[in-house]
Length: 101
Image (cartoon, rainbow, N blue to C red; front, side):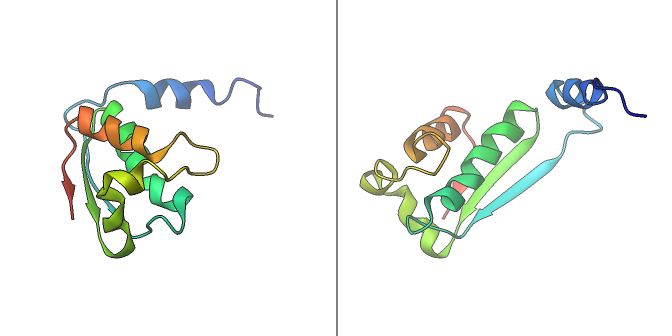
């Protein structure tokens, strides 16, 4: 039988800064542009979350995703259920996560 508190250790472990041995490197590739705002947001949202967890992160945009780097496009893309894309990009810039196009 599983208790109601079975997820607590997993949540606590996920919020801790990883030790140098468990620190990982991630390359997140975005291919979706403004035609699919929710999918376009994922590399930026995941990059911020991984960086906050203490991992090394890079973002690469290719194909339709390259248009997201235009200020006018980023300012007008709002993913479903997420803050505007411009906020996610601002967080990536604040964290100094490299973005390759």
